[in-house]
View 1 (cartoon, rainbow, N blue to C red):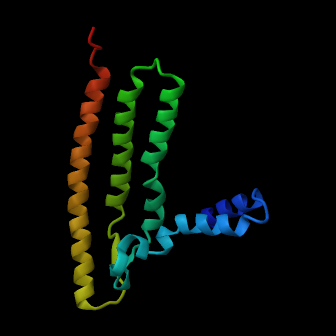
View 2: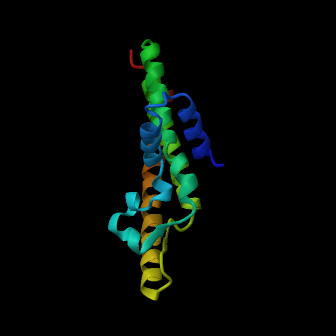
View 3: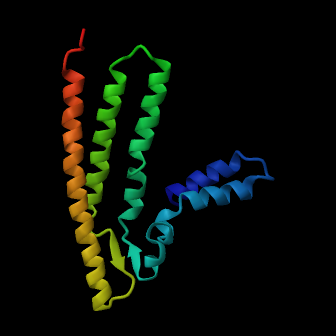
Length: 158
């Protein structure tokens, strides 16, 4: 039993019997991207499929959203903390770098559904372009991290 099945089972136990099927089906559809490549690739899913790495990458990609939400709640609870907005942007940039590093270590993100030379070349080209884009995004994000660190350590203007 994987994590998704355990989560859905726990949700099902705490729902009224009349709503269980509808809500569990909706939850399953919302978290089913790794199992349904059409949601990511669209029509290309007929000849390309997601690599097994997507199962881990999918959940790591949620880290910036979770971090942003937690820091926004902290800013609402403690509005006097003037350093929190600067820390929030820095934290989100660092979490973005975590996602990018996992994606870069994943290797091929898509694979050909059929082993024909044309599809293999297409998948290889897609993966190479994705790698270049991830490197560019990583460089931009590193610049954002450096700017965030500078903003965090520089003295407050009086």
